[in-house]
Length: 172
Image 1 (cartoon, helix red, strand yellow):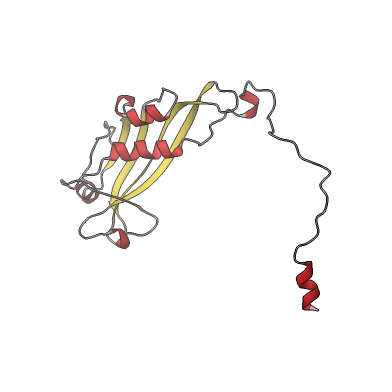
Image 2: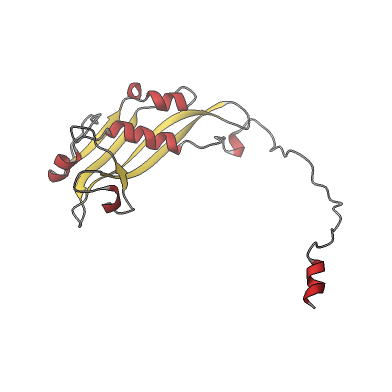
């Protein structure tokens, strides 16, 4: 496997014919959307992926990526660092392979006018989607001593009559 800088765009069909494998990183300077989605910090993303064709002749790009972002804990409102690891499996949409022709296990991805896919943007998208909706520390690492529950549970709930009891009488 050859250690290379991950290209911003990639021709998946040519890379699949050559069975190319890439291992490297995407600089955090190229990840502006991920920086906006985080609390201001993201590490370089370490990426490993390969291009190939499956048994049906579908071009696929499979791999995994990992990195670290800073998030704001929604329990204590302090920043913390979260490791993110994603796996992906893309198949480019071409004239030969339309979205309906691609198996469901592959994520379809559009190609530009040159037949390239924006691999760095796709991986950035995977990271953005992997950020939790409500990021929180582990309970033992959080500065908040207890979980708060809003509202009170009324223990003296009266049992209400069943509104369908009348129908039960009609049934007999």
